Length: 188
Image (tube, rainbow, N blue to C red):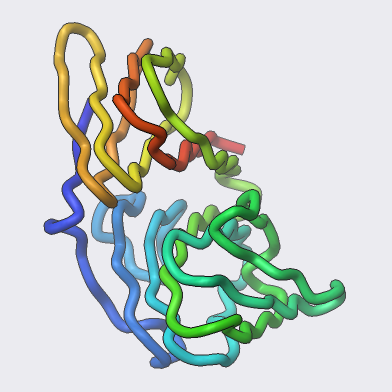
């Protein structure tokens, strides 16, 4: 198990120059926007506008903070995405624009290179103890509160926006309902 602390995440400008991304993890390590196989990041969106286009990339978005946004994804009806919404998967090479519902939001953005990697994202509410089998591929858990994670006799505490890269059978514990995002990335 590897813990990635929110205070250590790398910050970088958006591809389209319209804001800033907080990179949680990328593969290969230190890959740029043209060369990543997969990428897990957060972005603060403070104004309406177009998304950056990433040819050959699949994307899943979730709202972590704020009231949400309406997404206009080329070829589809507009979609409202809020903190209560299930993660939304769509092609990152489809022209997409966003309209904020009411003020700034922070989103979770998972991207994988189509044909090389695939991903799934689940929003979970953790209370009490749960076990998770993190075999195969890359399994990550991003916490929106305080969680305890145990694996192979090693225990770690996650705070808000900390992320753990999991391996094997993992026990996740919280004394109160805590939202977390389970991210599974597997070779295509």
